[in-house]
Amino acid sequence: MCGIVGIVSHKDVNQEIYDALTVLQHRGQDAAGMVTSDGRTLHLRKGNGLVRDVFRENHMLRLEGNVGIGHVRYPTAGSSSSAEAQPMYVNSPYGITLAHNGNLTNAESLKSDLFAEDLRHINTNSDSEVLLNILAHELHLQRVLNPTPTDIFKAVAGVHRRCQGAYAAVAMIIGCGVLGIRDPYGIRPLVYGRKETDEGYDYMLASESVALDSLGFELIDDVAPGEAVFITNDGQIYREQCADKTRLVPCIFEHVYLARPDSIMDEVSVYKSRLRMGEHLADSILSRYSQDEHDIDVVIPIPETGRTAALPLAHRLNVKYREGFVKNRYIGRTFIMPGQSQRRRSVRQKFNTIELEFKDKNVLLIDDSIVRGTTTQQIIQMARDAGARKVYVASAAPAIKYQNVYGIDMPSCEEFVAHNRTEEEVGRMLGADWLVYQKLNDLKSSAMEGNPNIDDFECSTLDGHYVTGDIDDTYLEQLSLTRNDRMKQQREAQSATDSNVLELHNHA
Image 1 (cartoon, one colour):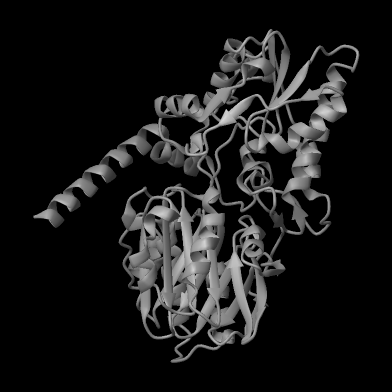
Image 2: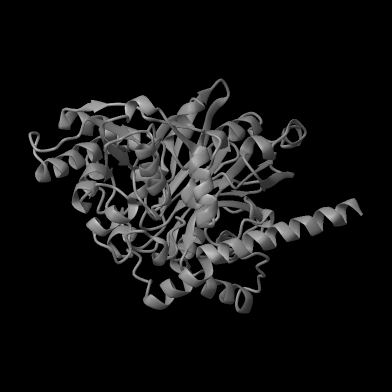
């Protein structure tokens, strides 16, 4: 899960890319980067931290040019080293920069091919650098000095033939324009739009439509699975289907958790899909406990994403909806953090209770999903400490039991609270009086309504089915070994050591 943006304008794009990345900050808080060009010179700034911390006034003044791309990152593959911040750059051919959201499932074999056959070297552990070099090599094979859109689309077709997994990417080809591509399954999102100016249309590609809205761009369409959209430096737009076989199978977790509610994804409102999740969840509760049987006094959401589903759920159950938690907005998303101890500390810093809404009441807490259970367990205890008589929990997503390989940081089954446990066992472990999960078919129905062209959803963390068809037990075992909590902590420690060594070197 990262955020990407690309803009071709009639004026400098640095401020608009900055603003778009700020809107997409929820998609990655680990690092940010931007590269701009006037068609000849490249200007790059990237580093660890939030958008507001990475780009200072002196950096913005140097980021000149009417064409550019940007990225906000949270790391899944690779590490959190600033060397792996994006956009990434190669100088041959033409000079190409790329920002990527997703995960290549065949990155290791591609690295070998790049070294042995394409004569290209990879300097980091990032699969984004692999994707960049595959694109660069496929462009090099076109053997043209000034590539046309046709040449570029041929290169993208080569990328689709070689790369597997989930990828949405924007790339800037120096002197030519900005390219947007989406994998043949459309797992990760990408949209594009335009804005009319006195000089003509400006164009923008972004992970979510909300980035377009905030900058005054009109949404044109989603980039279709396997499609490429190319915008020339002078504002001409071209699009072409570049993959042989495609299916629209977007990631269900964009609707559950990842995307902002005010975004439109594959023609479906994220906000309305979350409302429908609450309605379906209420029906599931009523199928177990009728209006006369349940003793729920109040429905309280766990901020932020649980809020939208909680409203229609409370209405359908005919009970009060109340805000019972105040959220500290300066604490990042806890499921991203390495290590249970760090997550536990962050939960207590992240939420505080309004005791009057809990005291002597039977409370139903609504969460968007339950991953490791760390947050939910502590919040249940906080509700009891605030005086709740009983605490029930409902999850807008089904139980998460399987690893995600397509760009969400869920690498190890053993870290999931629902792994090898029943719903009742999870409820007891969390300390709830009872727990209800959303049904998978209800979740799909919530997100599919409004676009009959959606073939299915990528739900591998819920059902263990990997749509790309290239994932086996060996791959999943290796993923768990290299990206579990313990390995994350080791990489974080090494990254901190490397940064300290670099700082001492610079002072020396």
